[in-house]
Amino acid sequence: MKKKISVVVPCYNEEEALKYFYKEINDVSKKMKELNFEFIFVNDGSKDKTLDEIKQLAIDDKRVRYVSFSRNFGKEAAMLAGLEYSRGDFVTIMDADLQDPPELLEEMYRLIVEEGYDCVSTRRVTRKGEPPIRSFFARMFYQIINGISDIEMVDGARDYRLMTRQVVDAIISVKEYNRYSKGIFSFVGFNTKWLEYENVQRIAGETKWSFWKLFVYALEGITAFSTTPLILSAIVGFVFCIVSFIMILVIVLKTLIFGDPVSGWPSLVCIIFLLSGIQLFSVGVLGQYLSKTYLETKRRPIYIVKETEEK
Image (tube, rainbow, N blue to C red; front, top):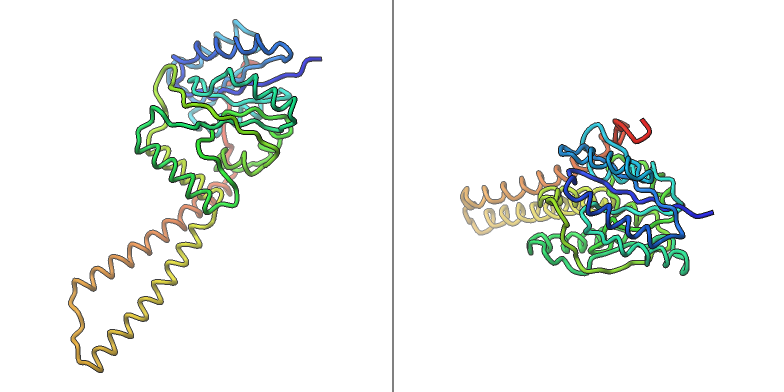
């Protein structure tokens, strides 16, 4: 009996790209005749005709399944839904914009079957086509997160990966509300092989990731997999308490022994601004962790399904 592979495709306003993606992945499925394919498209509250395009694909190809959310819950929720709805012995996550080359799937499957890997992941070795400032901050993020986290995150890593059912079940078992999948993939472990490829431009449509969204996503990753910012804020606070105590002693001694007048308000204002800024920064760091705890304790669903191909 043939084994099955599930292709999970998160979609948000991908109306223009879907026809190109389906053609490419369908061509790959024809080459991999030893496997049965199913295509799971997750409509993440798209505002264009993405869902209509997916429904038409489901009519034309019975291998196509879909999950449509009640609103936009984000790519993390879409990936989780796709994994939970998948039935395959192997599962892959791919973007609909063809920045994840479908032709790599053959090699990824071979590495799992012939070389015994549990997961084959992909990473970009270049960021060709990206704004330089965005590439710079992306590299800085990976340097920071790897420096403060116990979990290694590979620079240029994509969500595009082929996993065995065991790996998928492990990922699904992580029930965090604030999800950062790149970290979760690393957290669950397993024997992983990395495939490198050159950056590929979108086939159609526009990217949904603005610089601000990427920045917020980076903060999610840092707070989800490291408590170092809390430690750093405590250390900075302790150091400035010591410095302040020393400065007070110096001022008192200079005044009593040497008769030097106390410096005027400009220096005092500078010190107040500096210490206030550090206090606000530390409170902000604490607030980030507190907000994540608050959302986790609410126990809200990560996504809400409006309809599937079965109902």
